Length: 222
Image 1 (tube, rainbow, N blue to C red):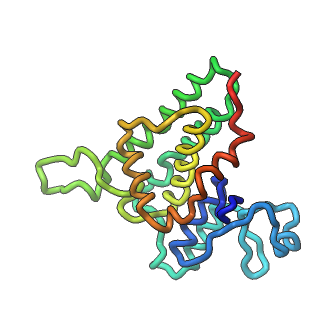
Image 2: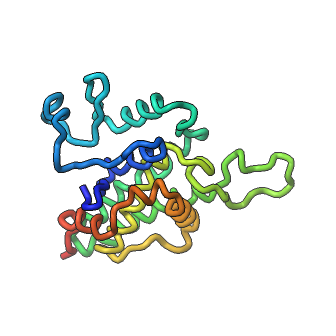
Image 3: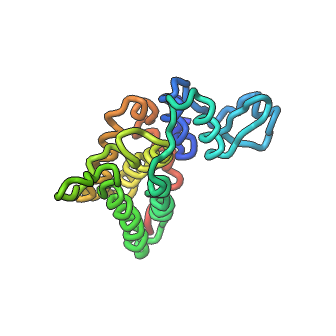
């Protein structure tokens, strides 16, 4: 848990923008296990939720439950385009391998793998969605202008991906002097639109807290 009261791990951070948009307090404390959790599921770690005495610990199941119960369709966060759900799904894994690598001669390989995953995400963000294309126009939309993965509205896919991208941006710069290339305009547009959204920035812990959380993970290269 960050000193700000916000979660700086990628699992818990996924839920916070969702909860804030729904008008709930999305703060999670990963150090102190609530009494409910100790009584109902002693071996379970956050994030979790309880409802009618039952414990839900699977992140995807929690998201589905929240979307179903929090006054639909007002908080409908499902995607209209199936590809949006899987966009960027390998980026965090490539980052994890990159940031944990301690061998200098292997760094280029891990960095290249991360860049490849980021490029794939960038391409998706810049590719116009079907509803951005005017069927009656003779000119094709060369680059998408949408704010988020699936359009101009936030979805569950964004709640999953944006916290991970933010962590990558902070941690990779601090420990590997790595930045998202400026030519990846889709990713930068995506992040900048997220940073302009209060519900997202209000769930972002301070950069120093994220760096501290990864200080033991990000090993110095040999």
